[in-house]
Picture (tube, one colour):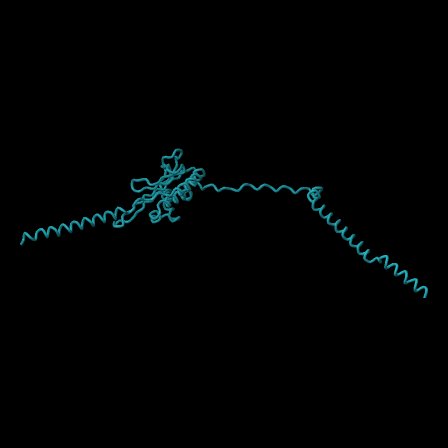
Length: 250
């Protein structure tokens, strides 16, 4: 009897083991389906950022850039020298400022939370206190850790465009040059109101004279026709003469 129960026990343990393996596989597949990669800035965001940084470099003489990383993996890097060119290694950039963001995403099943590390780095000749002031100033534009976690691509390029303004506020760079309007030319003097007055208006005057002549002609024609209507015809004049002779005989 004892020996008859052992296979059933082994069968039960085998079923539990199979069920455990199945759940392990299911949980493993579910965990692997999560996308924990940090998204890079969109192409439009990068191409719109570069010319802004170029204008700031021309005005302030400082190179500006951005660097987005996921741990040891570089997700996106760029500067006023172009998309994909790190400001630290860019030629002709002895003075530079870069916004650096390291984003880490964790699985839903993990007890750890997503995190973001935001720093503003610069060349050795720049004051560390000024760089820290720029880093704190990012909050003025709503560029905090939560924003970087939600949309790191947009946040990193947006932060790069604020660097020139924050650098000027921190006293590291001069204010960006404000474009001035071109001087307005003095208005040209009015033409001499001599013969030019009649020359410029000869068409109008000629038309007015023509209308006056036409009106005079119509008035003249109307008067002549009216006189003709009032004048007696030959029959009327003959009748009037016969009547006169009859009255004379009587």
